Length: 248
Length: 248
Image (cartoon, rainbow over the protein chains, first blue to last red):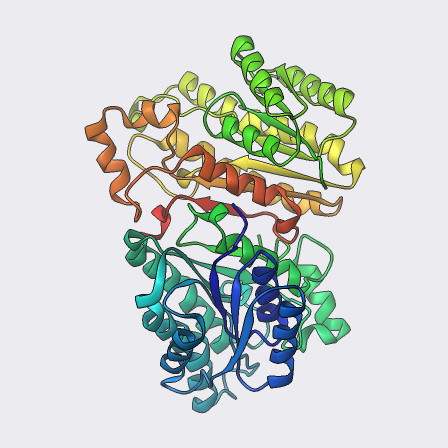
């Protein structure tokens, strides 16, 4: 039920952090993984290397998802690398920006929505023709969508958009046998999280959570692998909070 | 943990029974509990036949002495308690609010809420000093929504969700996670009683993107996941397992 042997997967933003952990977890369960990245070629190749060294199948592909046709381009590459059947999509690539309401620029706002919302939307659309019956789409949301933390208003709005999209996608694609869910991590110890590099940030995160330890990327990766698997075949349209019991 | 000790109340039918079989399949030592001796012994034999260590212990979750004894007997037999699945529940009698009585309230809440509370209290009594453990309550789509003629059932399941979140915060300090699984319409005796004749079932399935009820096995797979180490960063959550019903 939890095996992904014979399945194909795309993970965006898979060179580091949650994306990397997701790619590794999917590969460990037997999936062939397309490791997408933006700029970190060395890190992405290292993820591919790690998967292949363990006997798995992986390839890396660089596409700028901030571009209006980024999703379209990645979908085209996916067909070339993976072929005509996609079982799992993990739309993880995302950017963040801490800025007060007064400081946020139009450029910042547009970039956040382009990468965090537009790219996943059009990836789902462009990959639909090859997404299999029994396929599983996982969008990476965030605790920020429902908890007002820091000066992340625009970032939070992008994640709230994903929580809404998940329901619409699930309702529309359910009859085609495709499940769509989101995971919402809280603070996770990754490179993207400058927040947890300070004592104040760490104390704040631990104060919010019921569990008193900081999340590691594999804590999230293992949940992604579950949602991708047949063990989760009756779960769709939901955002699963993987946040150590934050803001309950 | 390779051979966890799992206790399932309401374990003789429907979702509880499917969970017992699912846990046995992954090597757990399983105690099933319910009120009917013959059915209980039959299920224990079925579990033993799969090669699992298993036992039936009779208990009525509405009575604290029964529950105290159930937990103590489980620990006396297997030395510890790792997972408690609180699946004993009733749908009661449907009817408008204008016709409820103190008796119909007690019948509903004594099983669904008081029974869950007693089971949690005594499971925590063992798990907290142990420094580990996972509690899984059973809610419902009715734990977050309303439906005509179901105010008592919905009230009882909303109660289970609030209790789950609060207990998660308390228990986290001791290394114990507390979550709930919230099924939608699932093919069990309870659904037969609620949905009645096949013609009426269409109304239940209309709002589900996959146009069918879930199977008890599909719900059980979510229970085994949330109880497992893969869900180690998930606590205080209500995992919706309903084929997309709450998305639509």
